[in-house]
Image (cartoon, rainbow, N blue to C red; front, side, top):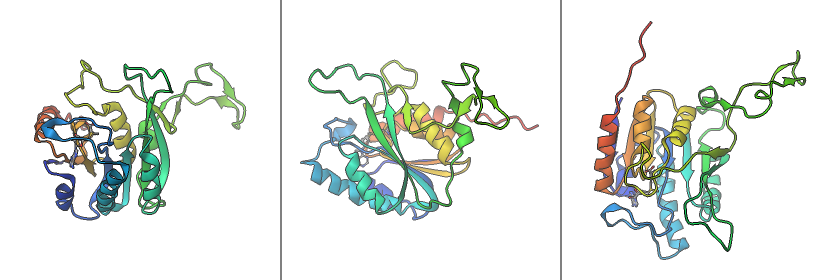
Length: 257
Ligand SMILES: C[S@@+](CC[C@H](N)C(=O)[O-])C[C@H]1O[C@@H](n2cnc3c(N)ncnc32)[C@H](O)[C@@H]1O
């Protein structure tokens, strides 16, 4: 198993990856909302058209890196995602449009409905051949089984299932200051959310490519779940934070019976 950190601009980093070698591609790019990242990297383009031009260019290149059986998850803002969706539909099969809902971000909107979710697109290269380990991501049901109901639609009638496959509405708290997984990064994605993606859409030994790796939380999760990992990130500060975090993960091998 390996973990590789590529400290490059996205276009340079992508040149280092061979086509059709990636099982799972996860992309969490800057959203063009004016965030300031380390090492002078700004999340701001002249306008949305300029931003989308940049995004389409690397997105098209990155799709070539996926194996025929590969899967893609891409994050973006509610404002940009419709354009990403239209672009992707021409290149890959979109299977789910996920809503990641979270707790309030502190400052509350008073003159409109504040945004409390981010969209995520899940897509696959080949509809008839891709990994989806639904058993590994089952969650507790919140209705029938808790009330000990019997499902009379089943033959013979039997108790409601206690577990179900999650739908496309996900709820994970955002990563905040003083939470155990927190590092100094303003867009750090929750490990629990990334874990769902990795478990569902890859197997042990598969290769995961993380574009705009940031805090390298996906590297941490990938190593813990015994997946190979390659992360591309332009900031050397974030790359060294990531390196330290990933090195701390100990792989505990299951005891062989
Ligand atoms: C939305 S954040 C990613 C957060 C990450 N997924 C996490 O969980 O921590 C976007 C990242 O893209 C990096 N970045 C911005 N422009 C870049 C570029 N041209 N090439 C590579 N990385 C870039 C930023 O430094 C920032 O860490």
